[in-house]
Image (cartoon, rainbow, N blue to C red):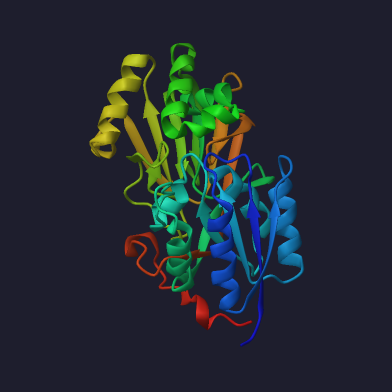
Length: 324
C-alpha cells in the first residue's frame, strides 16, 4: 500500500474536547489506509496558518483541521492556492462549514463519533471552493460582514474557555449583553460596477448558505464554487429593525423584502462615515473601509460524498482517486 503524507492540526482551546481514545481511533483508521499523519496542536493565534503553510510546502496531500470556523480560517490562509486538501473536523462552537457540507457534529455520548466522521471523509470527494480575499491581506471561507453583527463579535472576543464550553448557548448569552450598544451605519457599497448607499444594520458578503452559527439560512443561493459572492445589505436603524429582520431571515423570506438589497458580484467595497467593525468567518477582522475580491477555486476541500449537491457546481473527485 502506498503511503501518503497528511497532517492533523488541532486547537486545544476550541469549544469541544475529544477523548484520547477517540483521537487514537482516528489516527489508527487513517494510518491503516496508507496515510502517514503528523498531529500538531496550535500554540498561539496565527499558528494554524503557519502549520498549514508548512504542510503545503512539504507536499502534504491532506490536512485535517480540528477546531472551529476560526481555526479553519487560519488553515485556509495557509493552504490557499496550494494542492493540499483541507479536511474539516468540527471541534469548535459553531462549525458552520462542517454543517454546510454535512459533517456530523460532535456527540459526547458517542465514543465512535470521530471514527464515523473519518469513514465519511475517506469516502468523500475533493472540491475546489472559492475564497474571499479581504483588503488584499486575509482570505475567508464563509463570509465577510460589516455592521452590528461584527460589533457584537468584536465585543465578545476573545471568549473565555468556560464560555466556549457552553457552546452556542454561551456565545448567544455573551452577545446579547452587547446588543443594546449596537448601532446602524451609514455606508456606501460598491459591488462590481453597481453602487448602493443608505443606513444599514449589516452588510454581509456571503460565500455560503448558513449564518449565525449555522442556525439561519441567510443565503439560499450560495454555491461554494460558482465564482461569485452574494451581498446582503439590510437597511434599518434601530433594534426593532434588528428583531424584524432576524425573524424574516429565520422564516426565509428576507430576500423578498424591499429593505434587503441583494446583489451578486466578484468585488465588493464598503465605505462608512465612521470606522465600523467587520468580521471574517465570525472572527474580528478590523474596521472599514473593507474591500473583498473573489479568489475562485483557491482552496481544495474534502467533503462527504453525500454533501448537498446544491453547494457545488462541479462534481469533485473521489479522495482515493487523488494522486499520491
